[in-house]
Image 1 (cartoon, helix red, strand yellow):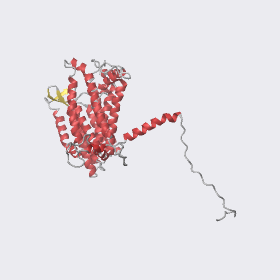
Image 2 (cartoon, helix red, strand yellow):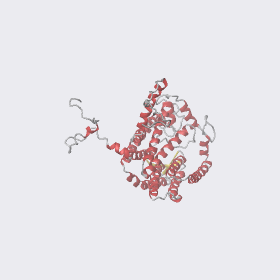
Image 3 (cartoon, helix red, strand yellow):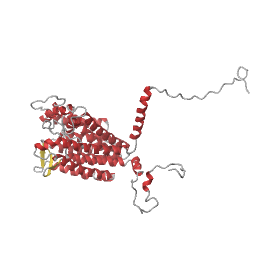
Image 4 (cartoon, one colour):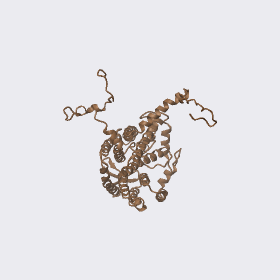
Length: 458
């Protein structure tokens, strides 16, 4: 055995004992935080599941639509009676539109992506034709000062500009996806042409009727598509400057729009040009709701004080009857819908799916923000309905079709397809079906132990 450097015998060192981690101290704070941490972990795992976006879109949109039907029935009764109509008149029309929209949503959710892309050009051509037809005397009709409607006979009307939103989303997504496949988006002219000219064509047809609210939503969709396409900041600034200059000119030249702009933050009705009656009574409705509201059907403002209580200002009636809890629930549903749309757009590898999902999410989110912001007195009253919630079949039908697009895209994710493929029908096939697994297919969903069990164990 070799000696040490000093010449003496080697020093025998004792072996180190393994360090065992000390158990955490059981403090009151740790006992309080531990359940919250476990809840956070479970929620995070549930949030990251493949079908989370699918369930959020499907469940959130259905809940918003059903709650909207309830509030339309509550908010429109007085208006219907004042017009010598049955109290459920507007509710029945909205319910019929919801049934048709549900069929469109189901059809869109079952369509393959190729069929969605094939429908882009026919929908765009049909929307442009109908929007031009609105300006033909004798065919188009004016509602609340806007020439944006076509009468279908009787009490049924259609607003083609609502379908222009869906047309721009589908056509713009298909156009940008094809240019990305050909690697043409690095050039400005290919990013702008023909997307921006066609969008300006739709905006021009809308502004001929005086509907600036729908034009703002269409502009938001255009900016959303350009942002998703990776447009540089300089291009955004240029397009935004042009759109802002046009918007300022349109506002300055219209006393009605100037009056709406002057009503931001108003707390008392004013006389003269800037009559803020609707904006102020919307605030009154929200303020009188309290925490849980006055009760469903017990609104006071809908008795002739609040104009458009079942359309543009239905959120105010919701706050008065369901209180802060009801309005926060509506906001949470729209937030979940927006998150799910962003998740679908971010998780896909298909360019068309990414642009279409991002366009639909921009459309619904921007419209909800503009509507709710106007009711809260934070934005000018733009005259746009709350998506899936306000009365109006022309707005409900294309929106539910767009929700069907998001559902189809969420189902088409690879992880979601694998999760759905693992799920079998609950009752399986009929008896007598061929194959060894035909009559017992339903049993595959049960959990089986990985090791053999004793013969007497159940």
